[in-house]
Amino acid sequence: MEASKLESALDVEDLLKLVKKLQKAGNLEPRIEDLVYRIDKLQKAKRLINEDLRQYNSHSEKLKDELDILNADKSQLDETLNRKQETCRILQLQCEEREAETQRQQQLSEESKHRIEDLTSKIQEEKLKQRKQRMEFEKQLEELMEKHRSLWEFHTEKRLTSEIGTMENRKQCLLAEGTHRSELLLP
Image (cartoon, rainbow, N blue to C red; front, top):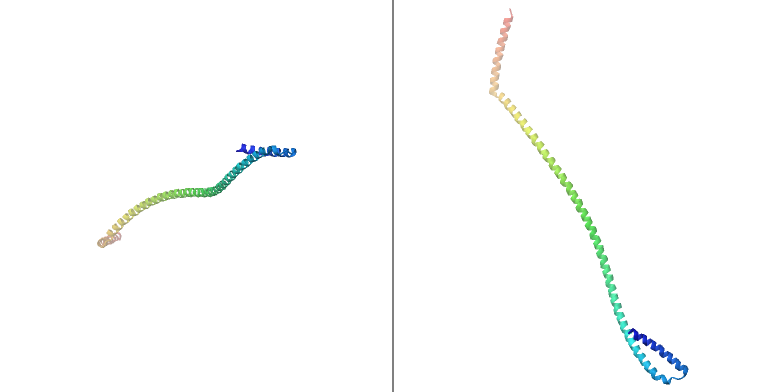
């Protein structure tokens, strides 16, 4: 197509040169058939060029429309990409925050676990200490109850009456012995 367009352009130039020569020479008739043939050829070439130009313009318009659609799609995709990248950044930040929170909670959990273990150990120690104290208390209570029983048995009414009687007898004996000694000592 390009070669025929170039030929047509050269033919037009040749035709113009020929017409100018003939005008100068004053003889246009012998070449009229050539001119008609060339004009006809040029008109056909012009029609072909015009048809090619229309096709080119039509194709160019279609390509422009397609380019506009592609640019609109590109803009939309860029916008979607930007939104998704922003969403991705936000999600990454949230993920990092959650990881940090999880680590902090694990740390707190570990600390709580250690404190619970320490407290459990102290509770066990305290229970053992209280058990030991309770056993000592029970032992002291048993001893005290035994002493109380002994005292109670010692101080029962029968026993006291018997003891009073025994003491009265001893007193009488001691008085009698004291009187007897004093008589012996007196000359």
